[in-house]
Length: 457
Picture 1 (cartoon, helix red, strand yellow):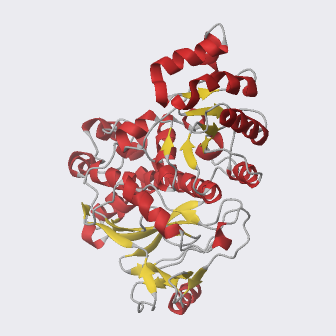
Picture 2: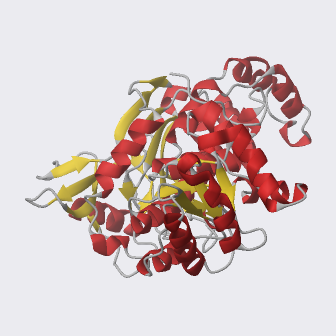
Picture 3: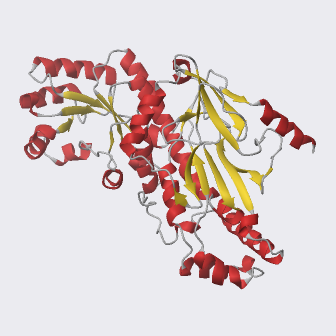
């Protein structure tokens, strides 16, 4: 199943969208196996991808980015150009020529993949993806997978917080110009849409992913004309009932009075500066008194979940919010501690123990436990061979087998639908804007015993 394109990186080179040490490790695995006559089928690794800790003030996270990862695993290849590039690197001078002549030209990811459903909520130290396959294959995926999942999960989690506060208000993602690359702008639109946003300003996200793109006008459009009313007339003559007029270039309330001549023939007005509560109340009054009661009010201007919460608590008559910088950069905490760790090799559990960075060993499953009313109770991390708990749901679903997609990936609208339905099961106390809850993740006794055994071995 072919997903969206990986972005603006040339697809022929995308396999090298990685850290160099993934390649040096991979080549070393190949050489070691060659020297010791080890077959790939006897060199099987299992990795977990998980988040070590929350960003600031979070009580849950939203998984996003799986579709792009699957596209990469299905399509990334070593081309003649990439192979010759690596062959010329001095560091690979002791690697057997068969690596470049035979192995890389035929390389295709042959991995088993389990993952949570996109849009699902989760907590630190829970595997959100499990990758199994030949060591070279599983190792090489690390950087690309982390890059995609870390960013989209970060933005989806931020968008979810905003959606919790805004409830039924229209939410538009406006962050492309402040995102950290053109591709990040597309991913921000995708991740925020998963978490319940209604649209985006990003046009690539529309043509590639089907997220409705829309926009209003900039202050420069107003300034281009001799007077404000002329700019409104020009725009309305062209766009009619699709017109959204920016009214805060000079004087917000005066502009609202000017555009009242259009009555309900325009769609909305946008306010992008100043006291949004005060302006929106005054503008709403002006519009209603002048036959524009159906005209909507859109607000923007460095909005985030905290500002939107305050605005709505003050009963501002705002119908839609455009959220840009604060969302596309997750400005209050722009990083996420996603890691990719080896947890089993050739059926032997592996553990990493270094100060506070414990990695839970062995192949595992996450079970979500519900109470008798079907509400979330807790998650429990268990070894794969343990009995399934009652009133539970397994969260890691088989997605690929030896590189072949075995579970049809849902389209973006269905991912959003799943998110909206599923987030209702999350207790309200976990949706608060301050981090105030312990991680609701339990560890099975069997897994605890395995950890103790490996620590003492």
